[in-house]
Amino acid sequence: MEIRNQTEFLLLGLTEDPALQPLIFSLFLSMYLVTILGNLLIILAVSSDSHLHTPMYFFLCSLSLNDICFSTSTIPKMLLNIQTQDQSITYTGCLSQVCFVIIFAVLENFLLAVMAYDRYVAICHPLSYTTIMNLCLCVLLVLTSLSISTVDALFDTLMILRLSFCTDLEIPTFFCELPQIIKLACSDTLIDNILIYIETCIFGGLPLSGIIFSYIHIVSSILRIPSSEGKQKAFSTCGSHLSVVSLFYGTVFGVYISSAMTDSPRKTVVASVMYTVVPPMLNPFIYSLRNRDVKEALRKLISRLTSLL
Image 1 (cartoon, one colour):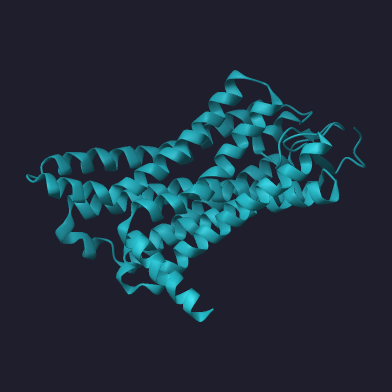
Image 2 (cartoon, one colour):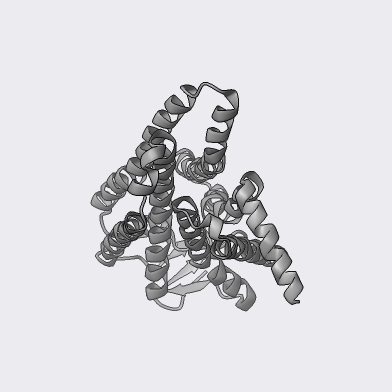
């Protein structure tokens, strides 16, 4: 397959079988709409219920907004390519997609770590919770996370700009993924690969270490609670967050293990879908099904919306 010029990449997508394209289009359109609707409902439910105007739910709204942006950075372009039967993406468009995917992926890491810290303060230092987790600190934590994510994404984009590419620019997935783009470069990529591993350790390892550290102290504090009812109540506030953390890091580790153990393009695509599409879609369901306050707020919101209709 030829490309029109050297400033374009080809997104090969999930399959090249024309008969499966309508099915894939319908499936991913449905998943995208569910992601947008689910996360918007979480944001609206929290915003409309004054009882949920706490740091925990402020971070949940930030996570939901990030999940909407994360999905929007990849799925619409894939749907457009299927609809127009054109697999190409411009060099500038590909760089932009890489940048946004990295921003929202790294921001997801930091938001999950910030939410773990919030649960740590709430359970381990309950008397000082409102003092420590004030509005200024909550906003500062989110903005700092966004700033770090943006700087990391811009650095990676500049790293791609210095590379030269061959004429065969086929990306074996449905969006411009940094490791896949580096594999297409004609120039030496040793330094780039080393930098990617260092960044992964820093921007993936540090938030994960923070989450593990927080939960070690959380579990230690919960075990010291004398009543079983108190233990269950304390742990219930962490259940949804733990499920989201397990889903996100489980899919991310699956991607890296899959990439390290196989060169199969099909498995690479499946791994990419698992960490870019599945967590943003499932996170609202996890929080709405496991969190009683969110369920109640959603019930009130839906009843208001139906009464207006």
